[in-house]
Image 1: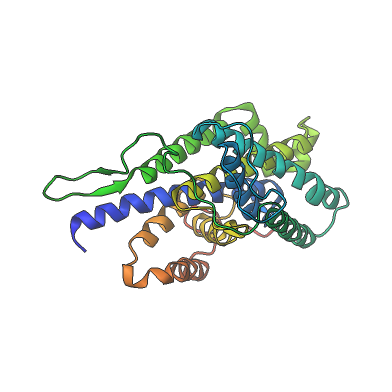
Image 2: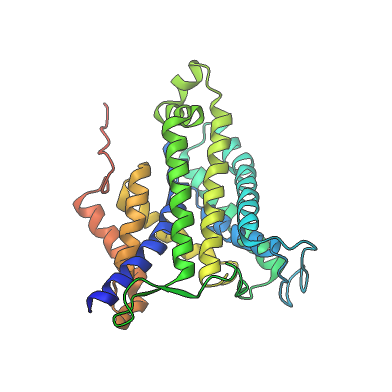
Amino acid sequence: MNLALFLQQVLNGLSIGSVYALFALGYTLIFSILGIINFAHGAIFTLGAYFTYALMGQAFGFNGLLANGALPLKLPFFPALILGSILAGAVGVGVERLAFRPLRQRGADPLLTVVSSLGVAVVIVNLIQYAVGAEIYTFPSDTYGNLPPAINFGTPEQPIPVRTVQLVIFGVSLVILMVLTYGINATKFGKAMRAVAEDGTTASLLGINTDRYIVLTFFASSFLAGLAGTLVGSSVSIAGPYFGIAFGLKGLAVIVLGGLGSIPGAVLGGLVLGVIEALVPGNFSAYKDAIAFAMLLVMLLVRPQGLLGRARIQKV
């Protein structure tokens, strides 16, 4: 692999890795608060892409309840992206109310909550299929306006072309990650959320409404999932209702790689995984997922707490 191709692949890897980071942050936020994995996250990832697609005025296919249907409005991509992600966040709040809160209030075993989130994921995926069918939906070619299809980071003699959509994805992801990092570390909401994550009972005794912050955390987590789903869908396509399942599994690999409950770890894990996948030779591209989970296995054997995670001390 020559230097130009190597740099091109690294840039592509950072782009997809930033989306992995966004998606994994949604897992991490909920895990840090409740200590559980929300398996409905991948389904909400898919919903975010469909919401944005619909808000841009695009028509659906020939199958499903909404066959040949389209919304009367046609928003530009970025307003549709934000509004679609907000709708995904609202779905996440509904998931918390229906699948998480009743079990939490009854003191149910966390495993039951995981099973409940799996059930919600199946329901959401089937509702999507019932509504719009299982067709592949592609965003319009002018989604990002009149930007050139690729930008050359090299010279005319030794070009290093990178797809413009990849650069836009990286830029949007970077801005969202910076805003989220600031919000968690420097705002009242972030400090209260960290207090709930540290010890919900003590935070409640100090006057923090833990239920409110859990709901806000579910909204933020699902907002990030919807955002990531749209960014990926605009880059490749919305590959049907099960679009988010593979990314859900990849997100699990990212949070284990970076460290369970670690926000910087989720970002680092996503970028590392994205770059490693991008550097896989073309002849072995079909094995990218296998490489991701091989990394997961090695990390569990060598450093179970992840790259930036902390070893948990078991008190007896």
